[in-house]
Image 1 (cartoon, rainbow, N blue to C red):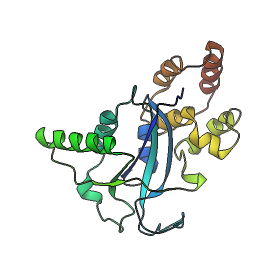
Image 2: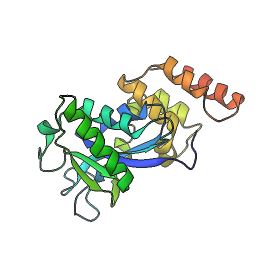
Image 3: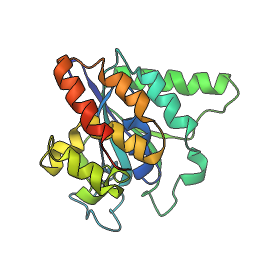
Length: 212
């Protein structure tokens, strides 16, 4: 499912629970996790106020499958930057943390294109990535964790919290739990993953048994 050609980007668009599910269900996204970034406070508290940091979802993606342009348009199509800027200080802020100049160039191009299309140039802050502070485990794959049977079955594959958070499968199922994806869509994708046919069918059989 993963290779060495993945990229990372972090996006802030309000409360991070829904963005985690929104991007996690997208083919080509290999991992997601939520946390805090973009501020100046070292080691901010992860419960309650997070200093001057913003709630964000960190995304690992395969650009050959999920183009950065696609991710950015999904980002801007699903929030209004002007409505969340400076709400509760910077906790809910429209923010992109880019990893390199190539990503920044794509970001600027997509922003300009949206302006030319009459959608308005987004009022989103763009900053270079420096550090990302993961949120507590209860915030990771938040919607999926509302289904105990799903978590119990996934524990057979991902026994630790870190393994579950980083799992592509958990990201997809979190999208189902939120209503952004459906089981047929995920099963179809699993059959394209670069694992053996036997492994594919074992995963499919497991997730078909989940009691939602």
